[in-house]
Image 1 (cartoon, rainbow, N blue to C red):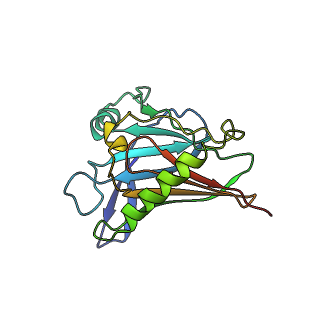
Image 2 (spheres, rainbow, N blue to C red; image 1 turned 60 degrees about the vertical axis):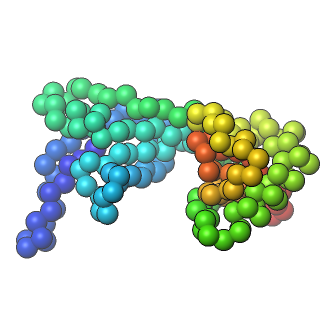
Length: 183
């Protein structure tokens, strides 16, 4: 974790602090979440780190602040781990997209209806469940509400042309469908 200082008049960037994070797996990606109500990124942001093979680590602002403020650089902070495994190999993940559906349109309710039909027809790939393990998060009773709309959809595309589609409205990714592809 680097703390950077930017001088607008001098067009220079300077590192004014550094702290190391211990990751489980190799680094894949990260995202900073702005503080509630903030319009821009700042030093009070939370951090999500994605490591291979699809493990998500969450660092809140408080734990990052403690880590970066300590003079002793051997200090460490533990991430809150989410036991989510997004398959990234065999076949290899080539693209992933999280989409927020517009709430004012009926598309989210229509997708929820389609998802309920797809879910009843087939399980998350009975033969492929070991290849596509989606677990983790915090169980939510909201995900089982009868007329609940799908607000966010997570699409994952793989090198063999297959596509995995999940309901990402709640903390647990809920399987919608798996479309087999041919290359």
